[in-house]
Length: 314
Image (cartoon, rainbow, N blue to C red; front, side, top):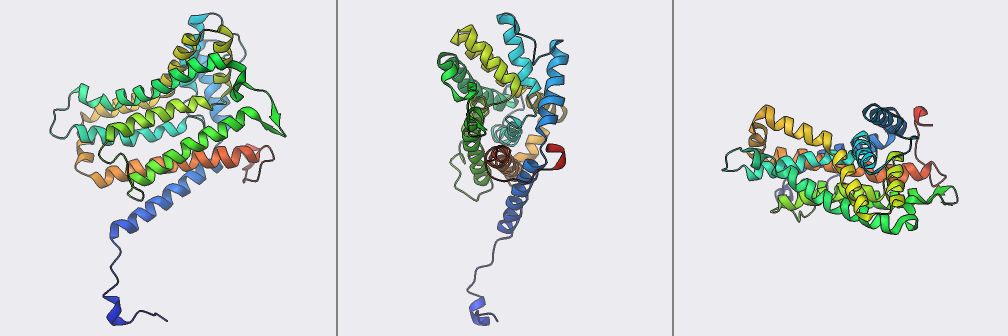
């Protein structure tokens, strides 16, 4: 029985239709992130895709053959970064497409669609990414084996290096969740009037993926850089690794611009709600995936809790 009388019903403000739609978008994005964490096959993306791509491009067994020389090491850095595009420690970089397109739509307002304007979002993304990856490569060589990321120790059954992964990726995932909810208007958006800062921040988060990456080819690169002993080599190698990580997304973004000659971003500029949905939904889904995968699923495989496992992941 309703406690609201007919006369009181007029006092209850109607819920905006866009709020209802936002709720469904949030729910759908969260469900998508959970589904990704459940369905994800690390063997497929790490070994079947990653190793085969690296082996094909380099022309030898990337995982087992030694890195011989500086030039070979730097080439290995870029190729292994590209080969790791779809790994669970990098796939969240796909969330950058929405914010870059949003920035581009903002900057094209009243301007001619020149390549300088069209590619500025990519330059800002790379700037944020390079700043973090270069600093970590430099510091990583100096710290060497003192980093948990290079440790072979275990606490119980859980590898210490994966503890660093869980912490780092958990923080990055939460940052993506916040950015997604903020883009959808659920939380305050500190980047509302600073779309360029949003893209730079996302670039920094992509660079931050190296801080916890357990990908075997990256681990091999990291050990090579430490053994080489030159922090500048380490910085350059990590920058090349990050550039390889975003190569595919960069090419897809440039292809979208080339095929539409900026018309797609022009449409988004006229449809801010559509832009927010694309941006927020993708950020939220990939943020949820990152947190759930690295802080629930991965620990569960080492007796650190429980998470459902599909037969092909056993």
